[in-house]
Amino acid sequence: MVVRLGLVGDENPSYPSHRELNAVRSMLGPDVMTVWLRTDGEQVRDLSGFDGVWLVPGSPYRNDVAAYAAVRWAREHDVPFLGVCGGLQYAVVEYFRNVLGQTTASHAESDGLDDSNVIQVLACSLHGRERIVRPITGTRFAALVQNQPFIGMHYCNYGPGPEQIKQLVAAGMVVEATADDAGAEVLELPSNRFFMLSLFQPQIGALAGKPPHPLLREFVRCAREQFQERAGREQPGHRMAPRGATSTAATPRP
Image (cartoon, rainbow, N blue to C red; front, side, top):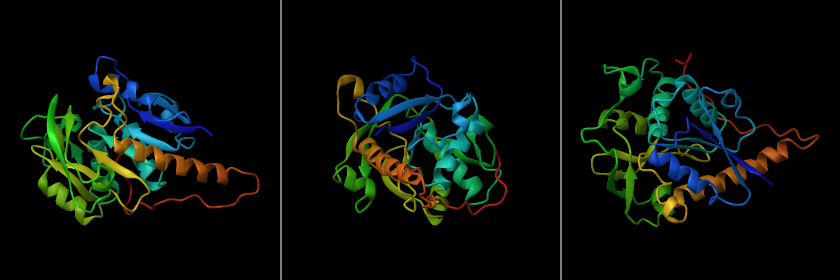
């Protein structure tokens, strides 16, 4: 049994977040294989062999089209998806474009500042900043962290604004944690098995030997479930239809 997790992003050892990410990979379980998938590479074009997709920090990506495509593929096929920092930001843009039908929705950093930005410059930069992450009682994330606030490290300058958060919630997403200067710290799409987004970086602490954050453990648990279903579908003579969600919008913007 090998659970395959695709780390979609452009590895850069000079990034503290990527060094921490590489440190946490060996802590996710002996049955878990993690694979870096460059956004400008060939492998990222076919994610069907992966049981989970992690859109990692480090945006803008070399190929934004591939990053958005990875989000959409995981969302529509109900494959466990984790978006962290830039991954949250791109997942929000993808949702606005392909679920809310706002095909011109854009990202202030990668697309430039204008009225179409659904990801905006944070009022206070969180790059290299710690904040108290406060889970919202009754949510999945709160259950994962036993409803206890904790210190989360950030390396981001962008996020959805209050109006965008309202629209996301109206369209089915749930705000599951908040933090000062961050607004929506954790978002979930509960209609999927696992589709969770965070501004704080759950891999931070791995270099110091800290165990994986509960968010990462839940991601891996759901990926194991996905593996079991995928293995069952691949058995000869098995005709079970794959799980999947349907996009509600028309032609997507790349």
